[in-house]
Image (cartoon, rainbow, N blue to C red; front, side, top):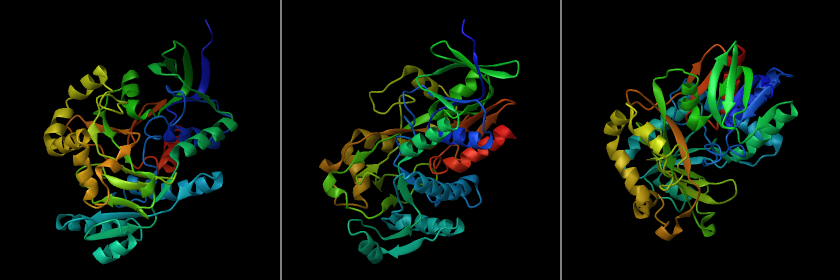
Length: 400
């Protein structure tokens, strides 16, 4: 029997948060033996590699909250990292558009909150909005110049390269099957039957984070529910249809920002996402069905009060997912030029949304910690934007 490899730290998950944490840990503790494992064959395979690439400025979050602070710090630190590593970055700015009188109060509230969060929003009336964005229709808008777009998978790969250059080790195709504590160590057994051990363990598994928590025998008051965000891409002729990112005024009760037009870092423009309950943790289409995942979602006691509270919006999202014409209506509300044939296939993403036992959506970070393990149970949007400051906080906890 081969001897179990011993490490100072094992990190599960090679998305942007796992990569940032690994890189920063070795900056703080050079010479440490650190292992990153991931069940996929490459990094950034799920949430990190399937989002819209937006670097958020912190418009939506309560002033003084961790989300607001991490977002503002993350914006500046991500920009600096991209410039240092020659990773694509474009500060194109964001326009949040109110299309009717019912949305005007929400837009005004976002304008005030942007100021409170240290941003410099510009209020645009209908005429100013039309001059800035001829293809966009609205009663008013606010322009957030700080918002940018980038390539998060490239950032993740760069961080992992720095981690490896500092002596770190990465192993792909290693799915965690069991986590046990033994004699002051964490023993991690993978699907191939091989085990590795470490003094500390960090869970950055995203969509699977709560399952790794349960593997260690820890109790929580939340569960991850997977919500699929479906995107479309516009034809190349529309690559210049907008100058900025175009967002609707979101429902403040929901953590989703609505269907928006996004200028991608490759020059294309995407439309999306919506938010529908996925039938698998990694369910990127309606044909992706995992019976265990469905059972876990529908038998969870927090699911039904959540469904009761948001059944109308859930039904609308479901309808718009199945009928592209209904999805189109949301887009045409602020960009009437786009037609049904313009909505071309594009990759979808799945968001790991933590929901409490009482059916509440968790909007903030949630950590589960033991003497020698730290689990990032919930890292809500804008986690990609905020990955560097979040990772610093995670490493502080590990070394504290």
